[in-house]
Image (cartoon, rainbow, N blue to C red):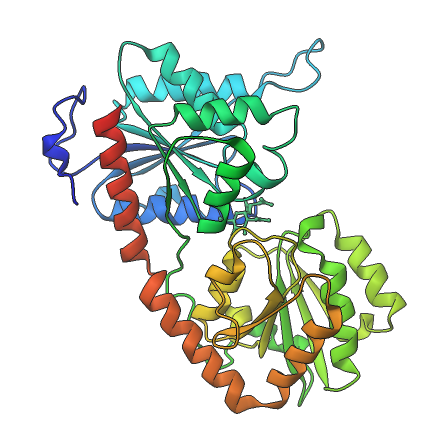
Length: 394
Ligand code: GMT
C-alpha cells in the first residue's frame, strides 16, 4: 500500500509534498553499485527530488553541472602517519552529518553496506535527537565476500539491523543476508534497472566494429575484471568457441585480472582474436555489435551487464548460481550452465552463434523481460516507496 509522504507526521522537517531531499552514498568507480546509485539519483532528481551524491570522488557516470536537482559532495580523506590507512568510515560519517544538517536531508541511502551503512549509522547517532531515515541497499560482495569476513561481520550485521529499511538487488542476495547474518530486519527485493532507451538494439552502429573482421561473430564480455568475474573462464570458453565458429572476443573493462586474462588468451592461442578495449563510461554501443554476451562469474548477485545485454536484445550465456537466475531466464533469454562448465558455456554460445533465429528470439525475450520487470519507472517507484516507509519508521 502506498504511504503518502504527507502522512509522515513523525518526520522532523517534513518534506514538501512528495519531494524528498536524499543523500546518496556510493562508490564512484566502475562497478554496478555505483552505476545503479547514479542512475537512481538521476531519475529521482528528474522526478523532482533533490539528490546529494556523497563519495570520495565524482561517480563516473555523473554530470552534475548539467543536471537539475543533483549535487555532489566530496569526502576528504585524512592521511596521518599513525593510521594504517585513511579512515574513510569516519570521514564519510562526518560528511553525512554536515550535509544532512546543511541540506536538511530526509533520507540517507547507502549503496553497498561496507563501510557505508556503518558510517550512516554513526552519522545518525551524531545527529541525535534530529531524526534521519537510513536506507541500505545490498549489492553482492558486501554480503557474500567482504561483509561476511570475520573481521567485519559483526559491524555489518549491526549496521544492517540499525537501518530503517534494507533492500537487496535479488531474492538470492536477501536470502544470503538472512542466512549469513541472521538479521531479523525485513529485506525488500528492489532489483537493478536499465534505461531501455539507451540500451536498445542499434543495428550494429558502433565505432568499435573496426575491431571485428568481415564475417566474424562477436562474443562480448564487460566487467571490472575482479577475480569473482573469472575472466579466465570467459577466454577458455572463447578458445573452444573459436574452434567451431569464426568469432572475435571483445573484452570491455579493466581490473586486477586483466593481465592474467591476457596470459590465458596468449597460452590458448586466441590473443589475436581477442580485443582488450579497456574501461568505457558508456557501454551501450558494444552491445549493438554483440551476438552473444558471456559471463563466467561465481555467484553474481545480480549481473547488471547481463541486464544491459538483454535490454539491447543480446542473449546471455552465464554460469548459474547467485542471483543471475532472477535476471536471465534459462532457455528463454539466454542459457545458464553449471558453475565451472567451460565447455557448457562454449557449447551454448556456439549454438546461438550458429542459429541466428534462436539468438534473435532470445534477444527479443530478454528485452521484453527488461521492459516488464526492470524498467526505471517501476524500480524507481519502488525505491520511493522504500524511502517513505523508512521515513515513517525513523
Ligand atoms: O561486489 C562487487 O564486486 C562490485 C559490485 C559493484 O559495486 O558493482 O557488484 C555487485 O553489485 C552489482 C550492482 O547491484 C551487481 O550487478 C553485481 O552482480 C554485484 N557483484 C557481485 O555480486 C559479484
